[in-house]
Amino acid sequence: MVSVDEAVICRLKKAGLNFEILVDPYKADEFRKTKKGSLDEIVAIKNVYRDARKADLISTEELQKAFASINIDQIITKILLEGEMQLTTEQRRKMIEEKRTQIADLIAKRAINPQNNLPHPPSRIINAMEQAGVQIDPFADAESQVDKTIKAIKSLLPIKMQRVVIQLTIPPQFAGKVYSSVKRLVNEFEEKWLGDGSLQIIANIPAGIQVELLKLVGDATHGNFRSDILRREDV
Image (cartoon, rainbow, N blue to C red):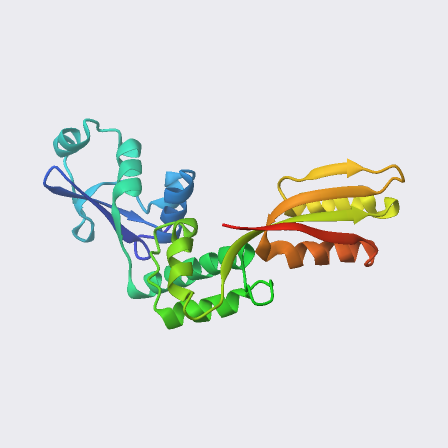
């Protein structure tokens, strides 16, 4: 449980009143994204306030009028999901920094430099984001901010969202090990066992993880495998 001193206010305006709770901003943000978590770990104290800093509690009658309920857990959950968190400057800076890294990691896995068909490292993408002045919403999920970020950095980086259909042929002695390794990186792929015991895999993957996949298979087979790009698909 977060202490009262370290908690921030999450405020929901409803029925002409402010409804405030004291929360851990990071756990509250995670709860918004996943809808999972213990309220005991998220809130400093299970109270709903008119003014949290003055410890001015909302009355039961006002809760009933605004929420048609006096169930504190249900009301706190609603405030968590719909309210606005009042972050300190340092908390906002840290959350924006973490979100920027998440966005850059997603782009690095999905996009390539069309000049050499290789992924941009996340650090290069972050530099471009900062140069372009990309505005990061600390409360929106990273996925929803990918498209606008790519549009913003296109003038600074040659970049293209692409998927690659790749075929891998693995010798029999490495087939089992490679199958397990690929399964951890690639969610779905086609597999075919050849007459000589070799394993053939066809996977449709984000272009940005092609290098990672080839390195994984190369390490597992000591370089004894074949890879063929069947096609590239711009997305």
